[in-house]
Amino acid sequence: MEILGINVLEIVGLFFILLIILLILMLLISIVVGAYLIKRNKLIFPKIFIYIADNFYSILLRLFLLIGTEETFYNVGIEFYNKYYEEQFKKSKNKVLILPHCLRDTKCPAKLTPNGVECVFCGRCCIGDIIKTAKENGYKVFIVPGSTFLKRILREVKPDGVFGVACSRDLFYGMNYLSRKGIPSQGQALIKDGCINTMVNVNELLQRLKESNANNNK
Image 1 (cartoon, rainbow, N blue to C red):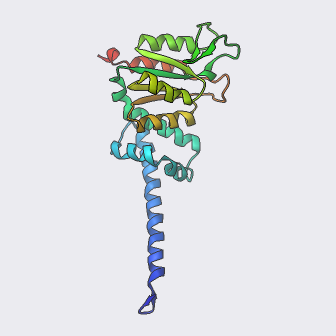
Image 2 (image 1 turned 45 degrees about the vertical axis):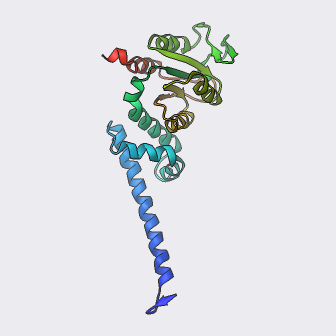
Image 3 (image 1 turned 45 degrees about the horizontal axis):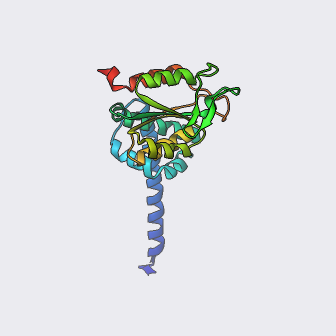
């Protein structure tokens, strides 16, 4: 279709291509600026960002891979969820702490039960100390062998706040799932993953568990 010798369809097509490129550039800039602000402990238009993070994370990941790594994307997302839900989480009255069973020592004597792994406090790993601090600060604690346990815990325990420890990928998707369910969460990524003999920064985790107890902040 031509008007005055100009192919209108080509112009419209070019316009839409330029528009898409512009939108992608704007999203990339938003991702970079957003990540920078999160590092600076600032959130601008948090409700808009939480909606985008909850519902369009797969698109954000594809765009982020143009400028960064998958693990960095997950870590930025975790940090965003942590900051967004921090104050709401402190007000939760029925908190649970979800620990991955891979934190256990390879010779762990604990047994798997319908409620997850039941720690016997043998001292071979860090889990016993984490459980002690968590319970002192009002948490119910579950050591789980997989993410399917999370849905069961939500259904049976009905927590109004969830603190998760996991590898960055699983943690991001878990926090994303909780956010879409309207449940405030906090998370700490493992510093060594691999599904066996994993590690978490125990001192940092214990401090965060204490700080997340609203009674400790009065």
